[in-house]
Image (cartoon, rainbow, N blue to C red):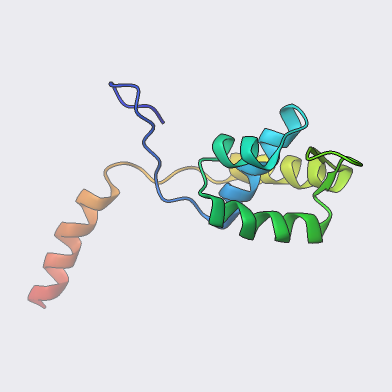
Length: 110
């Protein structure tokens, strides 16, 4: 995730990955919306969109009379299932884009 220069380099993430990242931030400790935004590498607009969905689904809850959010039991179940699914699927090999090009050229010649 970090380059040689200490700069964060993010790949394109799926909505599920972003959702899991947000939940992991909350799981480590109660967090404010700002902490969630920075911890999950999201803009204000993005965190607003995701927070509405996450709260509506009951994956996190707001701590009474504070600006803090905490993970719910349902949120913990989501994280556990997400981790299990990540282990089932292996990442694509780095050579895949290089392999696709020769195949595409072959198909274009046909």
